[in-house]
Length: 214
Image 1 (cartoon, one colour):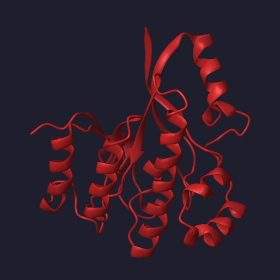
Image 2 (image 1 turned 90 degrees about the vertical axis):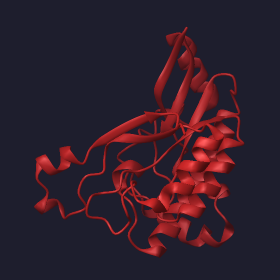
Image 3 (image 1 turned 180 degrees about the vertical axis):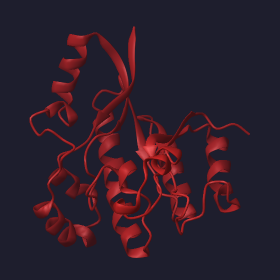
Image 4 (image 1 turned 90 degrees about the horizontal axis):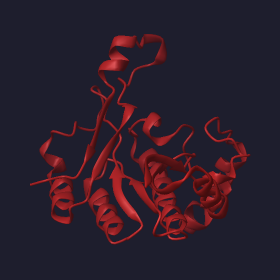
């Protein structure tokens, strides 16, 4: 039996609209009209077409898969783990609404083949209470197998993950036996590209995956 632990999926940008609260629709319409995504080949319908994806899996002998994001959530211009942690409250609120829209789309997509798919929802560290609420919601969804957290750059205004403010998040994950993941390649120093040096970029790139334990 072949199980893929690093598959990817995502909606067409316009298809996220029904998953956003109505107060974001006008801003979303402006965003989606202007966005150009370098991260998704729109001819690869297996990103969002359940039947096409299942046919491709069957052709390759893949029984099941863990699904990471593979498109732009609302209000992003890069994949979430490359876009960095928001600095301003308004930007956080926009991006958090976008991630929640993706998370809810992901549940519906996985539920089209519940025996073969488990998705990873996305969280942000800016507001710990909201992250805990989303984690608890995700843990109730049988289609969800864990959550992704972006790495916090070493010079960011949001505290690093060893700060005590995150204890409610770790405690909730441990209580629920809910895996947390951080994507390799994220966490580069938050500085203008012209000042970025390769050693800094590589030193900020970390990855970890697995269940949280007490």
